[in-house]
Amino acid sequence: ALFSQVPSLSPSCAPSMAGTCARRPATSVLVTLVVVCLLMIGVLLTIVLQLGLAILMCPLLLCRRGRGRFHHIQSYVWRGVPSFLCVGLNPFWCTSIRWMGERAGPPRGSQGSIIFCNHRSNADACFNGWSLSRSRIEARYVYKSSLKGTPLGVCLRLAGDLAVKFGDKQAIAQMLEEAKDIIRSGYNVVVFPEGTRSPSGILQEFKPGFFRICAELQCPAVPMVMIGTEHAWPLSGFKMGRASVKVGFGEPLYADGPGGAERLAASMEKRMTAMARELLSESGDLEAPDDPFLTGQPYPYWEATGELVGLPKEEQVRLLRAGTTHARGQRLL
Image (cartoon, rainbow, N blue to C red; front, side, top):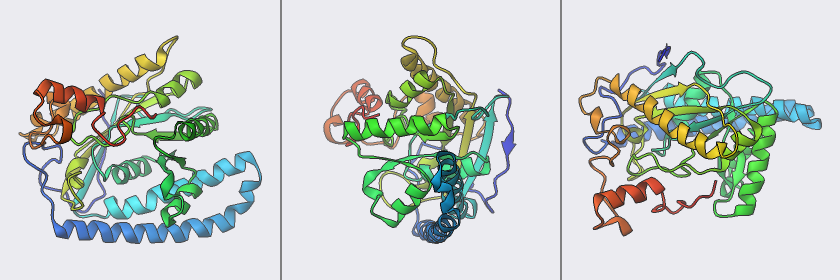
């Protein structure tokens, strides 16, 4: 693959690649305090900027095209400012971006793309937003409807993001229709097709909803892979740690013919796995071979819980792949 690397803007990097999986991710109170302070400053600043822009741009809301432009600008602010402070200026988090192919990334056209990204960490939204902002890619996200009544909900609505109540099929169907309108209008949507974070690092089975949209609209499906975010903010608790994250954008895929959504999902999984393996092979980290993208097994430090305890390893992997052991592990999307 042809690579073009974007140099990191972070002032310093962690000494080891965050894709390392042979030991449990190290966390510290210092890193946590720094990240939380930067994130709070970023969110407060963003709220002020978004509200100010909303007042100045309110005439745009009078027409359909104007509303799209309104949310487009708001989305850049909501994605860019907090992620710049939280990731870009963070001395403990380092990010590098690679374009994996000559046509990598969302293509320019009359309709938008759906960007599919793996999901390992609580910090994924921060790194995802920072990577898109640095790459000058604007996109909308899906968020829990329970955030609507919070200050964050104001920012999300101004940015045109998609609210959904997980478990409510009617609300999910409505959200998918709104996503179609966004894509038809020429804007991008980012989704985590696994539907929930992967505690074991294993790539979980993809939910079909957005692949069906790709098949229906014939819009591009762009693979995006992030390696190392599980070290920035492990799922095991609130504390955070040093991380050096690698991000890869791949060439767009397309659905074709009857059953195209299912084939597209399978192709996307293969492409994302291949991209992750290529990123890991270049990391120079002696422990990178333990990454689940390479082994197909959970992190070496992963411990079975709940219904997985006592099961044979093959059965554990099958259930982890299915994602049915999580609270939101049903096929909601």
